[in-house]
Length: 424
Image (cartoon, rainbow, N blue to C red; front, top):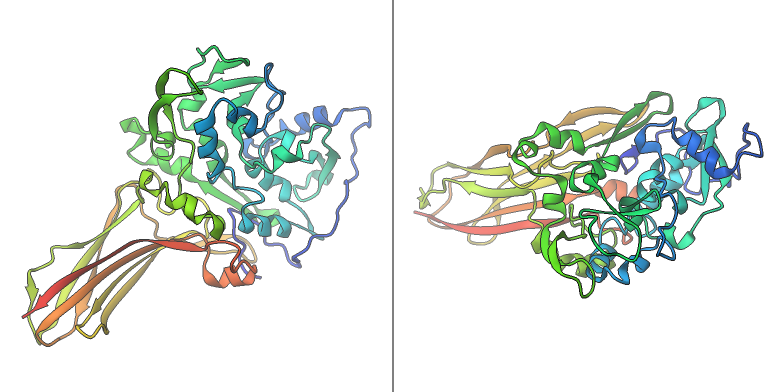
């Protein structure tokens, strides 16, 4: 069995590409219990990352919870969100869709566990889980959701997922004259709003299932929190502008939610390329103490360093399939590679028969590592020194296995530099 792709990993035998139609599982609850009430009661028994978000209904003054409705006034924020990773976390994410199909098979269904982060609102879920047969997480009892909104489902992590609770719009200020109910939320100013999904770490041994999103704990263990940083500091850069068309400018934040900046699909590359300047890559790469020249016909040693300079968490973080590759190459005057070193940075997992992390060499915040590269004896002339760094969400083998070629973007090069050194 090959490893699966996302942080929530299913490793049951006999998985197949197209899941059977499971229909509505039988329920032991009385038929008179309304689906929404039954779903809320069940949700309250689960860990926070297995609970769908209850918005409490559409706020007075709004017609629905859809992002386009919010964008009628919050135009710039809406345009930013539309090209964000959040907006593309469901149907626009072929990798997630492959995993979602895989999570529903003849051995059960754990797909509902994934949806609580990718389509978090109760209103976005066509069927609601109201119980578990024999208490088994892969045997959910479903009932049709009377409040299901198909268009809202397609929006993935939409505005209301963070900004609507108790039928009220939550904001960072709460003092505006908005045409809808509004309330200030302290959570929007802290990591709490992010860690609901980005801190979901658990092993379900009976299902050979692991969820390994530990970014919140990684941040807490690093130096940035004590220095006043939050997730929003980097992932939602601050900007002064009106919150709504014609409003008074005030400090607010971008809603691109920059992360790896690897597009979910090739067709999204142009949009992301336009905003990459707002998000410095976490890793920096550089040569260390280069001499003015190196001696001809004698071996020498060069050094390069990598640093997690900009990420407040481990690098890479989140999905355990993610990794970085840093390569140093030496080329002679003819362009021939005469020296090379490549380093893979990331965790390595074994998924069968049960999840087990074999190794982990990810970089802690501000951690620096140095590597050496031997220079062979060369004639007088020049030597080209290349440094390249790339980030990956999935390796080529797994991309082929899951038939994702051309459907998703596996990774991208984010640093490439060339330096010339004299050989005397």
